[in-house]
Image 1 (cartoon, chains in turn purple, yellow):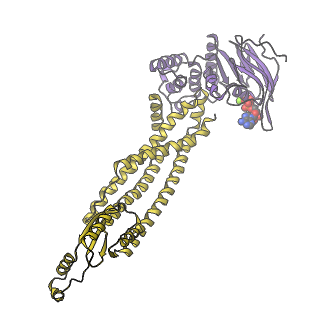
Image 2 (image 1 turned 180 degrees about the vertical axis):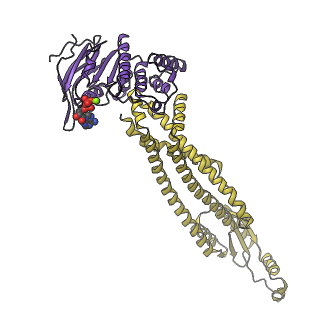
Image 3 (image 1 turned 90 degrees about the horizontal axis):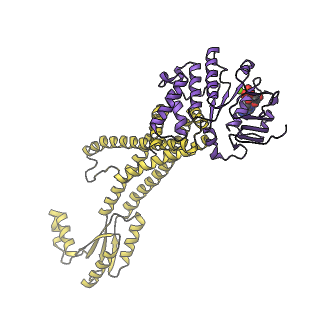
Length: 234
Length: 292
Ligand SMILES: Nc1ncnc2c1ncn2[C@@H]1O[C@H](COP(=O)(O)OP(=O)(O)O)[C@@H](O)[C@H]1O
Ligand SMILES: [Mg+2]
């Protein structure tokens, strides 16, 4: 694929020829695509295709073996260690297994994002956290602890955590895969409403059914290779 | 800063079990080490008071005149190891002898001449160190003009000093071993604490925490662990001290000797050291957790 002119105002993610190897395993091979701002972008593919690995490259839990990537204006190949937190504070991340901290309350789990970002005012934190918990319908459970919640409720809290910092980009790695259909629907709708408020959403799924919903762009991964419609800004 | 402390304290309460183990480990070690310290300090006191009791007697040559005598006394008074110099004339010595012998004074009645020499008795200051120093002092005294002979309890000093030095050396080695063992135990306990919340740390990183956000509350926790452990150990030691010392005294073991607890500056030092141990334990275990 030809390298497109890059406009940071328009393109929020650009991957060019990105590969990732774990020893002998080729998790990603020469993956190239763009995601535009305010897209609702799908990365689909069977399990083991490299979807989670791709997500991890985007928030730098893993580093790519080769290639070139820009996320929200930051060049991932050149980023310094102390800039990684800056990048992550501009993202909201939702995982299949929720990844809430079990011995912190719902409120503290969500509030931690703001604390980490250096917001010290208790009132600001309280207002923003309660506001976003309201949105996901978990305000009345704000002092509950994650293990006492159902999967769907935990994932709603996780979505609240991803939204509370007003990120420009939310990465959701199979956010509905371990939920029953109703809970999945609810999570999906929350992401759709975040999208309608201007947040770019990148969501991975092995469930092709989801693709029909609200999608503005997608790629299909198979054995680490990008197949099918590429996501270059159209 | 306030925030760091608040988060550190909250984590502290969140993980009571491992923290408890860590505090107990530190407390027991501090107890053992300070008990050694306490023993050493008091044995040292005992050594000093015992040394102060040592006398070196220099017998003057017969017929030494007053001028020589004053010269000798003056010289001896300049020695730093010497606490006091007392002249004992042959007459005084004889009177003392008579008194000691008591009823058998008759034995001495027949003496026309006083057979005892004039003597200078020297007492030592507490800071003289070791049998060698005492014998070198004795040698210097013997070398003075007008001194015929020098007498002191050489064998005793050597034996007692030897035992004390051996004890001190073994204590130092033991303390060294215990301190390094404690360092390792504390570092490992803290590592356990960190492992038990590796997920929490990972999550916190992924939502954008920088090193400082992770590190400083943990350092604070490490120092708190050290402080609480140190305090508990010292309180334990004080309790043990409080219980045993009156019993020793009432058993008549401590008649001439006042046993004392650790001086407050040493107490502070011990607290400071255990805080440092907690911090170092944290410092070394934390690094691998900052890689995420
Ligand atoms: N940390 C890792 N070490 C080694 N292999 C890995 C690691 N993470 C992922 N892989 C491998 O990379 C491939 C893609 O994995 P993953 O990205 O989790 O797939 P998906 O999320 O699409 O199911 C798999 O073959 C997986 O075994
Ligand atoms: Mg996956």
